Amino acid sequence: MIEFPIHIVGSGAVGSLITAKAIQQNIDAIQIVRHSSLTNSVVVLDNESIALTNKTLISHVSQIEFLVLPVKAFDVEPVLTSIRPLLKHGAQVVITHNGLGTLETSKRLIGDIADIYFCTTSTGAYTDGNSVFLAGKGLSQWSTISLCPHKTEARAFVTQIVNALFYHASYVENLNVVLWSKLAVNSVINPITAIENIINGDVLKPQYDELIDKILLELIMVANKNGIALSFQSLKESVVNVATNTKNNSSSMRQDVLAKRKTEIDFINGYIVELAKQYDIDVPANHSIVEKVKELVLL
Image 1 (cartoon, one colour):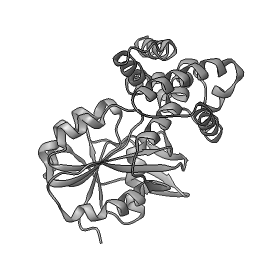
Image 2 (cartoon, rainbow, N blue to C red):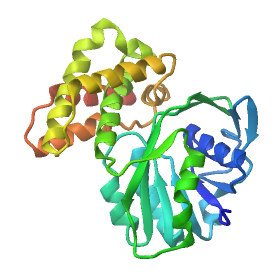
Image 3 (cartoon, helix red, strand yellow):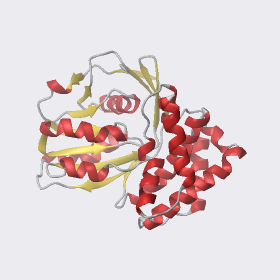
């Protein structure tokens, strides 16, 4: 029996979905929110409306033993910086977001006092009014990023909790290839749907095929220099499968652009561009994608 609460940061679609899944399985879940509001107060799961009522401001939290961080990649560093003083030594921290580039930062900020895990998932959620709806149950894969010197009983519950909060969750020993494969899918679907203002399935139209190939081939070159061997055919198939399975969905980046919010482009195609600079590799397609997305948000 889990005798400690699970703290979940944020009241966004994914954070609310995770909280609802915890409630559905009788896990004590507390949402840490920026301000008191009715935003995303109901989650519809399996035709059941689950009310999210256990919300609190970070200033009202005294100690955290188990933390789930379903925030945008650019929010990981500021959130961990503010929450570090509240983490119990030996706390368990599960991070989930699109893109790459936060793991070393996370280890630097809290690796000495907390165990860190990363979960990548293709499950989607969207908001409509003050309600959150499941867009599709996707595969989730997670792994240990680092373990701290402090051992607590909470470590024994990590697998149980991750399996409860994420759909189709499985543990993998080496997450690198999984993360790069997910990055490849995100580097295609997210920015193209955002730039062209289209739903996911439309990226498979013939006019985008050449651009998709260029993005993937550049990513493969960079990944190879980073010690990750990827297959173009396999990545292309993944893009097609995800775009097909989520054909009617609006990507998170498209939603951010339409709402004039900051996007995760720096942690997706931007991550490829920054690594390419280190390896002196030319990645014009990814560089152009980054610039176009940033221009849209500035308009």
